[in-house]
Image (cartoon, rainbow, N blue to C red; front, side):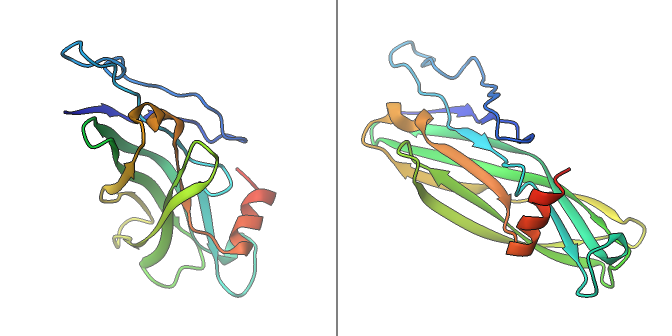
Length: 184
């Protein structure tokens, strides 16, 4: 039997807060037989939720090629109770804005989706490439990527909610330091 619910959301302001919102349908089997575990919490850490790409010339406002920021995600999870597996589908959503140093209307970025087990270890991480095409009449775009699938074998499905999902931009060391220093 497979039972699905929506992912809970967690905020990424300052420190990662656990302000989870779950659906009331999660936690009970529609047939009243087996309690259904909730989905893992999803985090957008503040130091990887924003991205600023600078030109090689410098680091002031006139050197910004583009900026991007996570706006959220859509997702769901399901438990295969017989095979003891957690299946997660998640689709990140972000926006981007061209800066004054942009010379091309297509910009490239990368984001990651990672899974942390209940012991605190990251057990899966995938990095995805995105080419953002800015229309001629717009310097700002919103983007929703295809669904990312995570499959997690579990010894016991009741441990599924103890996993955590992390998403963010795959940043260079300089970009990460910039975010930590000038977090918005």
